[in-house]
Length: 198
Length: 266
Image 1 (cartoon, each protein chain N blue to C red):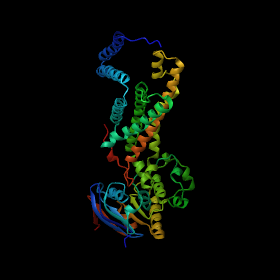
Image 2 (cartoon, rainbow over the protein chains, first blue to last red):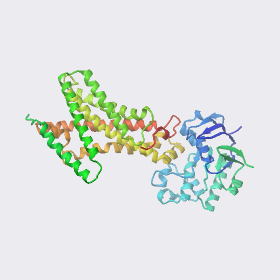
Image 3 (cartoon, rainbow over the protein chains, first blue to last red):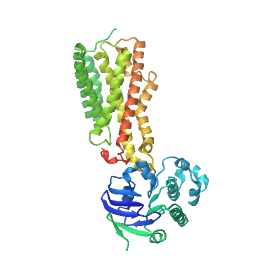
Image 4 (cartoon, each protein chain N blue to C red):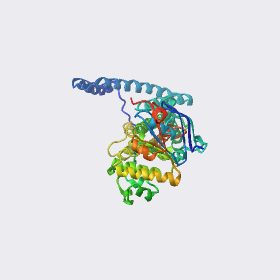
C-alpha cells in the first residue's frame, strides 16, 4: 500500500500528475527549470489551488486540518524565510541533536539571522522543519547552496531519518551524482508532466 | 452667544488668497493650480449644498430623512476608503470590508453617544446626530483606509514569509499576526497623535469652531474631549474590524494565502 498517493493532481498548469510514495522511500525529481517541480511540491502541501486527490495512508487530505497536513508533509523551499531576529526564536522546542547532525553547536540559537550565510540558513531551515516531526519530506533543492561537507551531513541525516523513522522523501535535485546516492527511484518532470527517468 | 455673521464678500476675500496661490503655482509651473482650484470649487459647492440640506433637516426633524443622509454619508465614505487602496479586494469585498467596518463602529458609537451621553429628545436631533456621525465617519475612514492599505500591500510584500509560516503548520492567524499588528498600528497612529498634540500644538477644529461661534471655552473643551474619545474608539474598533475581515479574506478555507483576491497595484 502506498503511503502517499497522488491522483490526477492539477495546479497552475501542471499535471495531471499521478504519483505513489512508499514508507521510507526516497524519490528524486528532476527536470528543467520552469517545468513545475516547485509547483508540484506546493500543490501536494496544499499551498496553491489544486484539483485531484491526495491521500496519506488512505486518508484523504481534506480530512486533515491545513496546519496538521502541512506538519505531516514537511515542505522545504529552495529559499528559506525568517521573521524573527534570532535563530532561537524560530525554534520553540530546539532539538539539539538534529542541529548537531547538521553541524551546529547549541550556541546557534543565539545567532542573529542577518549574520547567517545562505547555506547556514538552508540547513537551519531543515532543522526547523524537522522539529515538526514530518512523516513525509518534500525537499526543493535542499543542498543547492551548501559546501560539500554540509551536503554530506544533510544526506546522512535524511538517510538516517528514512531508516529509523521510515520517513518518505520527495527530493528535487539537479545533481546526477546526488540522485544516485540518495534515491530509490527517479522521475523527471517536463512541462508539467511526469516521466520515468531513462 | 455673539456670533459674527460672515458675508459673501468676506468669503470672496478669503478666496482671493486661493486664487493668488493658484496663480503663483501656475507661474512656478508646479502643476497643482488646476487641482487646487477644482478642490476649492468642490469645497464651496459641497459645503453650500450640505448647508442647505442641514437647514432643511433642522426645520423638519424626521428620522427617515436623517437616516437617508446618514446612509449616503456612509456610502460615500466607503467609496473613499476603497479608492485609497493601492491593492483592493476584488468583487464586492473591495467596497464591503471598509464600508461594513465603518458601519459597525461609527453607527453604533454615534448611537451610544446620542442616547447615553448627550441624551437629547428626540435622540436623533439632527443638530447633534449629523455632525457627530460626520466626524466619526471622517476619522474612521482614515484609519480603515490606512490599515487596509498596509494589510494588502504588506501581504503582497511578505508573501514568502507568510507562506513559509503556513508551510511550517502555523495557522493563518499566526502567519498574519505580525502584519495585522502593524496594520492596526498604522490605522491608529493619526488618532493617537491627534490626542497627544491636542491643545498644545493645535486647537482641534471642532473646538475652534465652537469658540468662534461664541461658546464658553470650557464647554467647547468638554465637547472636544468627548469627540476625541468617541472618534478614537470609533477609529480603533473600525480599523480592528476592517483589518480582521481583510486578513480573513486573504486566506481560504484550506488556509492558503490568496493574493489573487487582490487587484494589481494601481
